[in-house]
Image 1: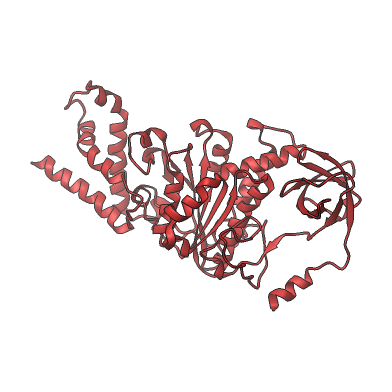
Image 2 (image 1 turned 90 degrees about the vertical axis):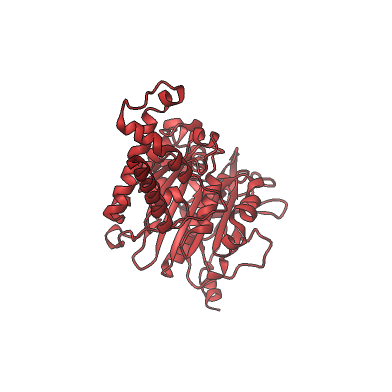
Length: 443
């Protein structure tokens, strides 16, 4: 009843109506109501086939409002009525949304019953908590992935990027985290995902156990740029709702790159000048506004964010990857050549880093991890010569030691998607590798 009363309060006393005066591609110009609109306002276009097409204001030009639609423009023409809708779109999340699959508008996609509305409205484009009132990151969070738990440990409230090309196992890695993490709640955003893979991810990768404590937000690649962008906002909004309940939230988004591509379409349609690789300035302005919403809250809850970045042409220095890397608190690099030799997850440990890891580890754990990294670095430096048989044993004691440990370390980093690795067993397993190697060297 309280939710219904709040909805009634949001109904406007007056309705403002304009007319469509121009359509260019996906850009609709509306005249007559520009004084009642602002950037982000919603407008409903009453199409000629009695269909309502919702649009969003993305700019103004010559005293006309520029809209982009959330759906198809079929039935919309010159003179079509344009009705001003609510100023700020909000959603009413509820705990009962766990286990459900929804779209960027908050509507169910899984064929289940209608979603129950909560009591408190959450703006889709919310601001991050004030920096001076945020709590610091918490202790380490167990993500269930051996290589990440050990070498790229993630703290509660940390934001990490997963940088990879297409087809190297990002989605499988995210599903393993969702199934095996110790976080209370998962919020998964599939932004611009292939429609064929959505059901596979939910049923095969995530599974019933993972879905039970997860809300999945989906916007497939064939949907409009506004829908794809809004699905990203919806993902962070739901994560904020569960964070405000005092829960530890794991927010997984695949991918930030497709969010930036959607913003590029919107910005260019609104007349923004293209900059690096065609991305307008708003694409780089929206990235921190989205990503900063993850992190510690002002209370007990926090949002641990892992955001995938689809690097264009396997170039890890392309504009979006470079911008995201500067915003987040660390990065996990997945490489195709590692996947091609059959080691999954295909994470390059030497190129990955967690900025909070040294501070949340004990001195013994840091010493163990640093020794392993030194062994992997020494082997990597001589890898070509070793494979060609040009390296002579005894030339460098450090390289000799790295060759002895390489098979065990490589096996340690390999993990099946049905296998879970907890934090304690990860460090114990790495310590056992060095203990066995040291005992062999003494003999």
